[in-house]
Image 1: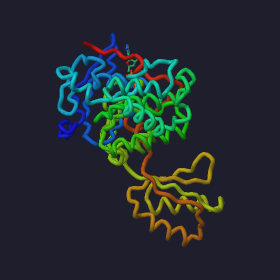
Image 2: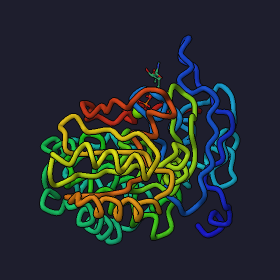
Image 3: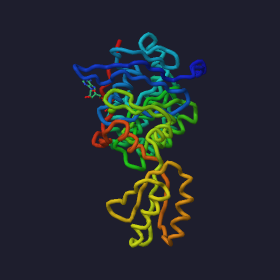
Image 4: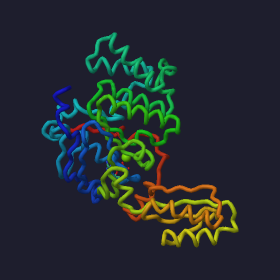
Length: 335
Ligand SMILES: Nc1ncnc2c1ncn2[C@@H]1O[C@H](COP(=O)(O)OP(=O)(O)O)[C@@H](O)[C@H]1O
Ligand SMILES: [Mg+2]
């Protein structure tokens, strides 16, 4: 595998377009993913995330544009590219009557592992994904979350240098989601590159080195999480005071020191104000103490990714957690 690691870029996509009827599902997407990193493609339902991944992974032909995976062209060198990538969901047609162990052993054998090695690998992966207890159960008795984990486990048998994860945690409970995050971090620590899509702003924030925000088939913002947050502008001050009677005076003080307008949260009690300069917080604390205003809580925060998305696209993010199934079930391999 070493010869593949020489490329600095795991993914270089230029001007990708996919049109379904009169719907430009993907409308000129560029993506650059540096090898050894986690890259997040963030966008609401229907933004074009799955369609983009399927083009990158040789599963769908682009109408325009080109993609290189570790320097190999997905159109002209699809066979090499397929050896370099893993896609969650590509093993969706597993045998329902067989157990998790049996399924993983079959995939391992298909990939050329010996019998003992295949068994060892299956056991190791089931342990990693907390599926050891369910190892002997037939797949038809698995929950959606268990299937998702087995699916990721299956795609990791070959330990591909580049792993595509299409909404790996959509619909998972928080505990399983955290396990997935740990696994994804471990994959990258052991040398893989991960490109994941998500509708969860927090997920991109937690995991990704860089993020592309995608909306209606276009990349509307790209950068590190901090760059994206910074592009939205100021930090914001959040402050709660001890005595409600001090509210008017507290706001007056804040507005004088920071030279901005403050707002009070609808529930009352919490004052927020934009801040250009986090350093001003010292002046503010001194002024508040001189007034005898006691604080319960004070924080200076960067804008949340929700605020970032709203600012960039002009509309918020509707999360869709109703879908349990993975869209890679609709795999079509072109020839
Ligand atoms: N096979 C297909 N045929 C027709 N339209 C499709 C197909 N796949 C996706 N679309 C449409 O393309 C757009 C983007 O879909 P998709 O890539 O699945 O978005 P996301 O993964 O971000 O939710 C949507 O409007 C969707 O309805
Ligand atoms: Mg999708």
